[in-house]
Amino acid sequence: MTIDKLKIATWNIYSGLPWGFYLNTDIDRLNKIIDHISCSDLDILALQEVGTKPLINNLKNKLEHIYDFYYIEKNIVIQYSILFIILFLLYYFIKNVIGLCLMFLLVNFVFKNTTVYNFLLNEIKGGLVFLVKKNINNNNVEILYNDFKEQNGDYLNLINKRGYLILNLTIDNKKITLINTHLNQSYNKCNYRINQIKELNNLLVNNEKYILLGDFNSIKDYNELSFLDKNLIDTLTDSEITWDINNDLTETFLNKSKINRRIDYIFLKNIEFSLSKIIFKEPIASDHYGVSAEIFIKKNKQKSKKIKK
Image (cartoon, rainbow, N blue to C red; front, side, top):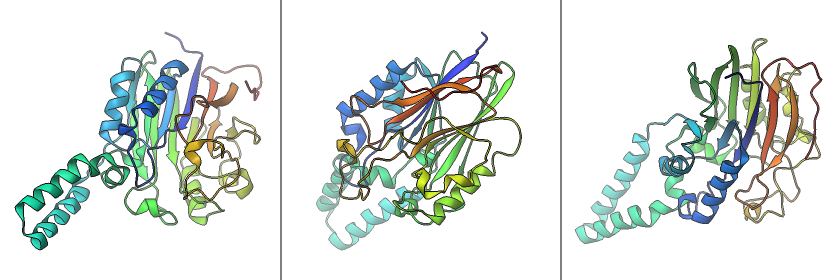
Protein backbone atom coordinates (compact mmCIF):
# COMPACT_ATOMS: atom_id res chain seq x y z
CA MET A 1 0.00 0.00 0.00
CA THR A 2 1.34 3.39 -1.01
CA ILE A 3 1.20 6.08 1.69
CA ASP A 4 1.18 9.68 0.50
CA LYS A 5 0.74 11.43 3.85
CA LEU A 6 0.65 10.70 7.58
CA LYS A 7 -1.19 12.24 10.49
CA ILE A 8 1.25 12.56 13.41
CA ALA A 9 0.91 13.96 16.93
CA THR A 10 2.56 14.45 20.30
CA TRP A 11 0.89 14.37 23.73
CA ASN A 12 2.06 14.45 27.33
CA ILE A 13 -0.60 12.41 29.13
CA TYR A 14 0.42 13.47 32.68
CA SER A 15 1.17 10.61 35.04
CA GLY A 16 0.68 12.90 38.05
CA LEU A 17 2.79 14.54 40.71
CA PRO A 18 5.40 12.53 42.64
CA TRP A 19 2.69 12.12 45.27
CA GLY A 20 -1.06 11.63 45.12
CA PHE A 21 -2.91 9.00 43.15
CA TYR A 22 -1.44 7.26 40.15
CA LEU A 23 -3.05 7.36 36.72
CA ASN A 24 -3.95 3.65 36.79
CA THR A 25 -6.36 4.35 39.66
CA ASP A 26 -7.89 7.30 37.84
CA ILE A 27 -10.02 5.16 35.55
CA ASP A 28 -12.14 8.04 34.29
CA ARG A 29 -9.14 10.01 33.04
CA LEU A 30 -7.47 6.90 31.63
CA ASN A 31 -10.61 6.13 29.64
CA LYS A 32 -10.68 9.70 28.32
CA ILE A 33 -7.10 9.31 27.12
CA ILE A 34 -7.93 6.04 25.38
CA ASP A 35 -11.07 7.53 23.80
CA HIS A 36 -9.14 10.54 22.52
CA ILE A 37 -6.53 8.33 20.88
CA SER A 38 -9.11 5.87 19.49
CA CYS A 39 -11.13 8.65 17.83
CA SER A 40 -8.14 10.64 16.53
CA ASP A 41 -7.31 8.48 13.49
CA LEU A 42 -3.63 9.30 14.02
CA ASP A 43 -1.01 7.32 12.13
CA ILE A 44 1.80 8.02 14.60
CA LEU A 45 1.52 9.33 18.16
CA ALA A 46 4.40 10.23 20.48
CA LEU A 47 3.47 10.04 24.17
CA GLN A 48 5.32 11.42 27.19
CA GLU A 49 4.98 10.54 30.90
CA VAL A 50 4.08 6.91 30.31
CA GLY A 51 6.09 5.56 33.20
CA THR A 52 5.12 1.99 34.01
CA LYS A 53 4.22 -1.37 32.53
CA PRO A 54 0.72 -1.39 34.12
CA LEU A 55 -0.05 1.87 32.32
CA ILE A 56 1.36 0.52 29.04
CA ASN A 57 -0.71 -2.63 29.48
CA ASN A 58 -3.87 -0.61 30.10
CA LEU A 59 -3.26 1.33 26.89
CA LYS A 60 -2.43 -1.83 24.96
CA ASN A 61 -5.57 -3.62 26.10
CA LYS A 62 -7.70 -1.00 24.35
CA LEU A 63 -5.44 0.19 21.53
CA GLU A 64 -3.19 -2.69 20.46
CA HIS A 65 -5.62 -3.72 17.71
CA ILE A 66 -4.96 -0.31 16.10
CA TYR A 67 -1.35 0.49 17.01
CA ASP A 68 2.03 -1.10 17.50
CA PHE A 69 3.76 0.17 20.64
CA TYR A 70 7.45 1.12 20.64
CA TYR A 71 9.31 1.86 23.87
CA ILE A 72 12.29 0.61 25.84
CA GLU A 73 12.03 -0.87 29.32
CA LYS A 74 14.69 -0.13 31.87
CA ASN A 75 16.29 -2.25 34.54
CA ILE A 76 14.76 -1.33 37.89
CA VAL A 77 16.92 -3.60 40.06
CA ILE A 78 18.36 -0.56 41.86
CA GLN A 79 14.91 0.78 42.74
CA TYR A 80 13.75 -2.63 44.00
CA SER A 81 16.98 -2.94 45.99
CA ILE A 82 16.20 0.39 47.68
CA LEU A 83 12.73 -0.86 48.65
CA PHE A 84 14.25 -4.10 49.97
CA ILE A 85 16.76 -2.15 52.06
CA ILE A 86 13.96 0.02 53.45
CA LEU A 87 11.95 -3.06 54.43
CA PHE A 88 15.05 -4.68 55.95
CA LEU A 89 15.79 -1.59 58.05
CA LEU A 90 12.17 -1.45 59.17
CA TYR A 91 12.39 -5.08 60.26
CA TYR A 92 15.72 -4.41 62.02
CA PHE A 93 14.27 -1.56 64.07
CA ILE A 94 10.76 -2.88 64.50
CA LYS A 95 11.78 -6.52 65.02
CA ASN A 96 8.18 -7.48 64.70
CA VAL A 97 7.10 -9.89 61.99
CA ILE A 98 3.47 -8.77 62.15
CA GLY A 99 4.51 -5.13 61.85
CA LEU A 100 6.74 -5.96 58.90
CA CYS A 101 3.88 -7.83 57.19
CA LEU A 102 1.59 -4.85 57.72
CA MET A 103 4.27 -2.60 56.22
CA PHE A 104 4.61 -4.96 53.25
CA LEU A 105 0.83 -4.86 52.70
CA LEU A 106 0.89 -1.06 52.98
CA VAL A 107 3.57 -0.83 50.28
CA ASN A 108 1.94 -3.30 47.89
CA PHE A 109 -1.73 -2.37 48.21
CA VAL A 110 -1.74 1.30 49.25
CA PHE A 111 1.60 2.93 48.46
CA LYS A 112 1.76 0.99 45.18
CA ASN A 113 -1.25 2.93 43.91
CA THR A 114 0.37 6.32 44.37
CA THR A 115 2.56 8.23 41.98
CA VAL A 116 5.51 8.31 44.39
CA TYR A 117 5.81 4.51 44.19
CA ASN A 118 5.53 4.48 40.42
CA PHE A 119 7.90 7.43 40.18
CA LEU A 120 10.52 5.44 42.08
CA LEU A 121 9.86 2.31 40.01
CA ASN A 122 9.54 3.97 36.62
CA GLU A 123 9.86 1.08 34.16
CA ILE A 124 9.78 2.86 30.78
CA LYS A 125 12.91 4.79 29.80
CA GLY A 126 12.14 8.49 29.73
CA GLY A 127 8.44 7.70 29.98
CA LEU A 128 8.48 7.91 26.17
CA VAL A 129 6.36 5.76 23.84
CA PHE A 130 5.54 5.71 20.12
CA LEU A 131 2.24 4.39 18.79
CA VAL A 132 2.34 3.49 15.08
CA LYS A 133 -0.76 2.41 13.18
CA LYS A 134 -0.63 -1.20 12.08
CA ASN A 135 -1.38 -0.45 8.41
CA ILE A 136 2.01 1.25 8.08
CA ASN A 137 4.73 -1.05 6.75
CA ASN A 138 7.15 -1.35 9.67
CA ASN A 139 9.42 -4.13 8.49
CA ASN A 140 12.53 -2.00 8.91
CA VAL A 141 11.85 -0.41 12.29
CA GLU A 142 14.83 0.70 14.38
CA ILE A 143 14.37 2.00 17.92
CA LEU A 144 16.93 3.61 20.23
CA TYR A 145 16.77 5.47 23.53
CA ASN A 146 19.36 7.80 25.08
CA ASP A 147 19.42 9.70 28.35
CA PHE A 148 20.44 13.31 27.96
CA LYS A 149 24.03 13.95 28.96
CA GLU A 150 22.72 16.96 30.89
CA GLN A 151 20.64 15.85 33.88
CA ASN A 152 21.01 18.90 36.13
CA GLY A 153 18.44 21.58 36.84
CA ASP A 154 15.38 19.43 37.56
CA TYR A 155 14.71 17.45 40.76
CA LEU A 156 12.76 14.86 38.75
CA ASN A 157 16.04 13.85 37.08
CA LEU A 158 17.42 12.48 40.35
CA ILE A 159 15.72 9.14 39.74
CA ASN A 160 14.09 9.31 36.32
CA LYS A 161 16.44 10.59 33.68
CA ARG A 162 15.23 12.85 30.88
CA GLY A 163 16.01 11.68 27.37
CA TYR A 164 14.81 10.98 23.85
CA LEU A 165 13.43 7.99 21.96
CA ILE A 166 14.44 7.59 18.32
CA LEU A 167 12.27 5.64 15.88
CA ASN A 168 13.50 5.01 12.33
CA LEU A 169 10.77 4.01 9.87
CA THR A 170 11.05 3.10 6.21
CA ILE A 171 7.82 3.96 4.40
CA ASP A 172 7.62 3.40 0.62
CA ASN A 173 11.42 3.17 0.56
CA LYS A 174 11.71 6.54 2.29
CA LYS A 175 13.45 6.70 5.66
CA ILE A 176 11.89 8.92 8.31
CA THR A 177 13.51 9.51 11.70
CA LEU A 178 11.19 10.45 14.56
CA ILE A 179 12.56 11.77 17.84
CA ASN A 180 10.24 11.81 20.87
CA THR A 181 11.57 13.84 23.80
CA HIS A 182 10.74 15.37 27.19
CA LEU A 183 13.05 18.16 28.37
CA ASN A 184 13.79 19.62 31.79
CA GLN A 185 11.04 21.44 33.62
CA SER A 186 11.79 25.06 34.49
CA TYR A 187 9.60 28.16 34.51
CA ASN A 188 12.47 30.37 33.38
CA LYS A 189 15.18 30.24 30.76
CA CYS A 190 17.42 27.33 31.70
CA ASN A 191 21.01 26.65 30.60
CA TYR A 192 20.55 22.98 31.45
CA ARG A 193 17.64 22.74 29.02
CA ILE A 194 19.66 24.57 26.36
CA ASN A 195 22.29 21.82 26.64
CA GLN A 196 19.57 19.23 26.06
CA ILE A 197 18.30 21.14 23.01
CA LYS A 198 21.83 21.28 21.61
CA GLU A 199 22.17 17.53 22.06
CA LEU A 200 18.93 17.00 20.13
CA ASN A 201 20.18 19.30 17.40
CA ASN A 202 23.34 17.21 17.02
CA LEU A 203 21.13 14.31 15.91
CA LEU A 204 20.04 16.20 12.79
CA VAL A 205 23.26 15.57 10.90
CA ASN A 206 22.21 15.11 7.28
CA ASN A 207 19.56 15.83 4.68
CA GLU A 208 17.24 12.99 5.66
CA LYS A 209 13.65 13.44 6.84
CA TYR A 210 13.33 14.26 10.55
CA ILE A 211 10.37 14.72 12.89
CA LEU A 212 11.33 16.12 16.29
CA LEU A 213 8.39 16.27 18.68
CA GLY A 214 7.49 16.19 22.34
CA ASP A 215 7.27 18.23 25.53
CA PHE A 216 10.06 20.81 25.39
CA ASN A 217 8.98 22.68 28.55
CA SER A 218 10.13 25.85 26.78
CA ILE A 219 8.46 28.85 25.19
CA LYS A 220 9.70 30.94 22.28
CA ASP A 221 10.38 33.95 24.57
CA TYR A 222 13.18 32.01 26.29
CA ASN A 223 15.07 31.86 22.96
CA GLU A 224 16.21 28.33 23.83
CA LEU A 225 14.67 26.80 20.73
CA SER A 226 16.83 29.09 18.58
CA PHE A 227 19.63 26.56 19.15
CA LEU A 228 17.79 24.11 16.91
CA ASP A 229 18.59 23.70 13.22
CA LYS A 230 17.35 26.73 11.26
CA ASN A 231 15.90 24.34 8.67
CA LEU A 232 13.45 22.88 11.16
CA ILE A 233 9.86 23.99 10.62
CA ASP A 234 7.61 24.61 13.62
CA THR A 235 4.18 23.40 12.51
CA LEU A 236 2.17 25.74 14.76
CA THR A 237 1.98 29.49 15.22
CA ASP A 238 3.19 31.17 18.41
CA SER A 239 -0.37 32.14 19.34
CA GLU A 240 -1.33 28.51 20.03
CA ILE A 241 -1.19 27.09 23.59
CA THR A 242 -0.80 23.57 24.97
CA TRP A 243 -0.56 24.53 28.68
CA ASP A 244 -3.82 26.20 29.71
CA ILE A 245 -4.09 27.77 33.17
CA ASN A 246 -7.87 27.23 32.97
CA ASN A 247 -7.30 23.48 32.77
CA ASP A 248 -8.00 22.04 36.24
CA LEU A 249 -5.10 19.60 35.94
CA THR A 250 -2.56 22.44 35.69
CA GLU A 251 -3.75 23.99 38.95
CA THR A 252 -1.26 22.57 41.46
CA PHE A 253 0.80 24.27 44.12
CA LEU A 254 3.93 23.30 42.17
CA ASN A 255 2.72 25.21 39.12
CA LYS A 256 4.39 28.61 39.23
CA SER A 257 3.32 29.61 35.73
CA LYS A 258 0.29 31.89 35.68
CA ILE A 259 0.20 32.38 31.92
CA ASN A 260 -0.96 30.26 29.03
CA ARG A 261 1.98 28.78 27.15
CA ARG A 262 2.91 26.49 24.29
CA ILE A 263 5.53 24.00 25.44
CA ASP A 264 4.70 21.07 23.14
CA TYR A 265 6.03 21.10 19.57
CA ILE A 266 6.30 19.27 16.28
CA PHE A 267 9.36 20.27 14.25
CA LEU A 268 9.93 19.01 10.70
CA LYS A 269 13.07 18.86 8.60
CA ASN A 270 12.89 18.09 4.86
CA ILE A 271 9.20 17.25 5.27
CA GLU A 272 6.25 19.31 4.07
CA PHE A 273 2.89 19.57 5.82
CA SER A 274 -0.56 20.95 5.12
CA LEU A 275 -2.32 21.06 8.48
CA SER A 276 -1.37 21.48 12.12
CA LYS A 277 -3.60 22.08 15.12
CA ILE A 278 -4.15 21.64 18.87
CA ILE A 279 -5.97 18.42 19.78
CA PHE A 280 -7.30 16.56 22.84
CA LYS A 281 -8.73 19.70 24.49
CA GLU A 282 -12.16 18.35 25.40
CA PRO A 283 -12.93 16.45 27.49
CA ILE A 284 -9.93 17.27 29.65
CA ALA A 285 -7.68 14.23 30.04
CA SER A 286 -4.24 15.72 30.77
CA ASP A 287 -2.52 18.89 31.93
CA HIS A 288 -1.25 19.22 28.34
CA TYR A 289 -3.13 19.48 25.08
CA GLY A 290 -1.79 17.55 22.12
CA VAL A 291 -0.38 18.83 18.83
CA SER A 292 -1.03 17.15 15.47
CA ALA A 293 0.21 17.69 11.92
CA GLU A 294 -0.49 16.14 8.53
CA ILE A 295 2.77 15.53 6.69
CA PHE A 296 3.56 14.52 3.13
CA ILE A 297 5.65 11.41 2.52
CA LYS A 298 6.06 12.18 -1.15
CA LYS A 299 7.33 15.52 -2.40
CA ASN A 300 4.43 17.95 -2.72
CA LYS A 301 4.52 20.81 -5.16
CA GLN A 302 2.61 23.16 -2.88
CA LYS A 303 4.45 25.03 -0.18
CA SER A 304 3.71 23.99 3.40
CA LYS A 305 1.00 26.03 5.01
CA LYS A 306 0.04 26.48 8.62
CA ILE A 307 -3.70 25.97 8.80
CA LYS A 308 -5.66 26.08 12.02
CA LYS A 309 -8.94 24.33 12.54
